[in-house]
Image (tube, rainbow, N blue to C red; front, side, top):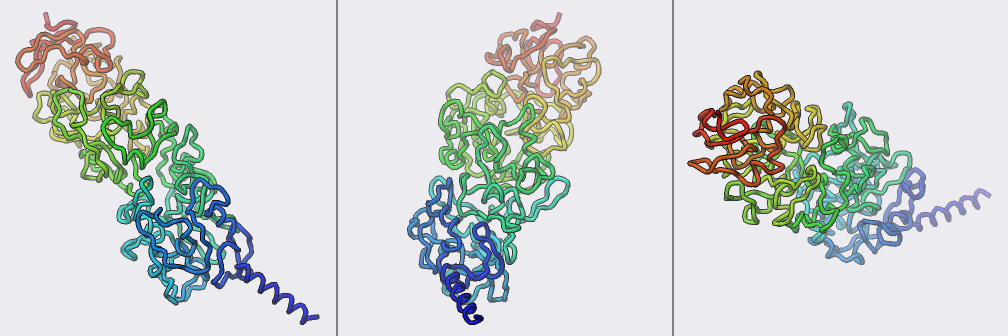
Length: 610
């Protein structure tokens, strides 16, 4: 009887081995179990059939590492750019990502089942197929290896340092190594640390690339694979680019991949989106005035980058869905770095590293509409070197709409104005984003630290959250036009008194509310009590054809000397001219540079004072 039982068990064990599974093997997400694993030399599909079906097209997937072979051994396939040049018929698990079983190390001896990917997948030699030793030169328990340890960058970047095709460009190993997303642990709200690992039946696999490239469940479950749950990783996926969520929210925040870590839930449960980064962007973009990220349906990083040129609306299809914004319009997820920009400097912050923009090259006549000659497409923005405004210009200037009609949304119903036309250093007055205005007719010393009369500034010095505790950047604000706090009031009801600016006036963030060193001492003259700020200054104060961004809604006299006379499209034209009730400015002449304004220069409701 015992002999018969032994014989039966031996037959069953042999049959199980021939099926490709080691006795007691755990096949996470497919068969379950516990214990050892295959000793190798067998095809993958017998045990990992469900995974294989998503990769070979038997089961339809939106994205996949497509393959057709299921051999038991590596071959001579080599991966060079473009990666799509390797036919699916020549691809297999063991010439792409995984060495054959067992998934342990022989030098040093490590018996756990975790060293299951190649360090460098590019060639049969680099994969270690000809070696009898499984060691740190050819096997890893993580998907990324720092280039200082191995120049390949580890499994994913060993191949993806080359382009897949024109729509999926190459990635930079050095760029990712310096990026904020190069991590296998993140710190979320309330100082909660999330360790990103796949929990295998014999060991753990550190997740770096696969924080973001995996299934939605795994992208919201840092300790994925625990208790025998399924592991999809980067085999195949129902989302684009093997992401753990969608890249175009399409009107719904749910499932948007960035909110897996940059979501609004402070302590998200496994399987739920939330704040796993201490940078809650989701809450910002739902504020009353925000970049409408959640509405995007058309963003295409590769197409927009490849087609970047004057007037092409970022290279996306024309129509109602053309105007858009997405996290990826401002941030390159493989290169964006941690850290803040230097206050008082005009350069792009580390978070913008690797994004693309439109650089202003000029020259441009004062307050003139830019043409294609005014820009060039800046394909890679370098933090600390390129102007931050380079990023903003690709959407908020004629680089986006060309010679056509500027969009009216979300600009309040009027045509969007052109930042380059306004900030042009050839203008008489401008905020110093592109150049210092210390030597211009409109220069003023009424400036607060850290700025000086020679400082340059950035767009985000004025446009960001109204709450200084929020993440940096122009994601959203409760204040109109996404004005940055703490002072956020700017409208045509703000009026002068005989004292300082009214509390909360936006200009007081950078200019002394007391008007100290102002070139117009009569700001505090009691005779001007009740005069609205926008009865004298442009409602959109980026820059323009008059010093101090002055408008002349009560009229301007004929040109004389340095005085241009009436300015069409400015003095009485919306949106720059938006005066409130009461006395309005008329202009007769300009004082010389540095001199104060006095009665001979201007009038109230006329061009001259009585």
